[in-house]
Amino acid sequence: AFLIALHVFPGPSAWSKDYPIAEGPRQSPINIVPDEAVYDANLPPISLNYDNCTSINISNNGHSVVVEFDDADDRSVIQGGPLNNAYRLKQFHFHWGGKGCHGSEHTVSGKTYTSELHLVHWNAARYGSFGEAVAASDGLAVLGVFLEIGDEHRGLHKITDALYMVKFKGTVADFRDFNPKCLLPRSLGYWTYPGSLTTPPLYESVTWIVLAEPIEVSEKQMGKFRTLLFSGEEEEVRKRMENNFRPPQPLNGRAVRSNFQ
Ligand SMILES: NS(=O)(=O)c1ccc(C(=O)NCc2c(F)c(F)c(F)c(F)c2F)cc1
Ligand SMILES: [Zn+2]
Image 1 (spheres, rainbow, N blue to C red):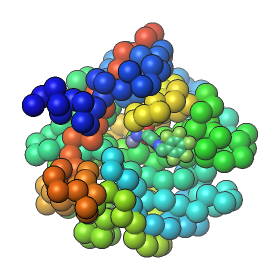
Image 2 (image 1 turned 45 degrees about the vertical axis):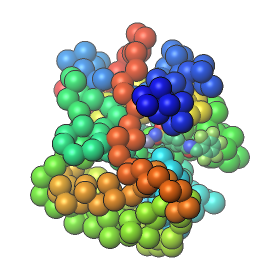
Image 3 (image 1 turned 120 degrees about the horizontal axis):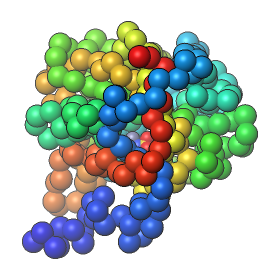
Image 4 (image 1 turned 90 degrees about the horizontal axis):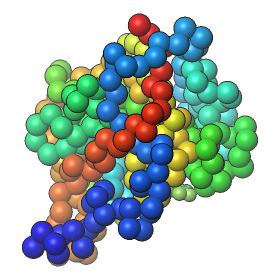
């Protein structure tokens, strides 16, 4: 049964067969070791300008739940930090576990969090579309935010209350006027390193910016993520969407820098 499972829905360990870059030099996620991170006093703060962002929809793509934004102009961008120009917000999505405290993609000295939010931005100063930027070494900037179990998160409610509309793979629903700024922790202290997409095609095109301070969400809110399904409405076998995270990959000598001591 295990071998059938591996064949039917190949997990991360099987990706290198179809995507040899899975064993490339700058893969993500990684285990971040704060004591080995290089404090870089020249790293400016991250600047997020989401005030005029336009969310469009929320969808279940069979891997995660994704909120897409209108990226036709520079209305919502991230800049500063390790970035040489403004990167446009395209979408955000989450990775999470089953019950318990694993589920994040990045780990911190081996510690896993219950979930990880990824805000995906692309370099519109240099590339004409997300599809073009996604394969370029400086094409993407992903802001990672850890989620840990604690008090209920008021900003997350709008998302968890919409999940019932996108239970099945391939479902999409309107999702307007959501500003992801409410999902950020108080501090924007971060680690940054050159990495990749954490799902196929695993392109090594991501400047990762991982915030050190987690946000708190309740077990009840996380439970709603686990009511999503990997499977489509027509499939007879229902597979709960959980554990959609890739484990940490070799650092291969990359420097992880921090803007805090
Ligand atoms: N977990 S993460 O590292 O933050 C991550 C971020 C974005 C994507 C993504 O956009 N995939 C779909 C996708 C592609 F993978 C493409 F290569 C492409 F050209 C697309 F247009 C596209 F939507 C995958 C993983
Ligand atoms: Zn992700």
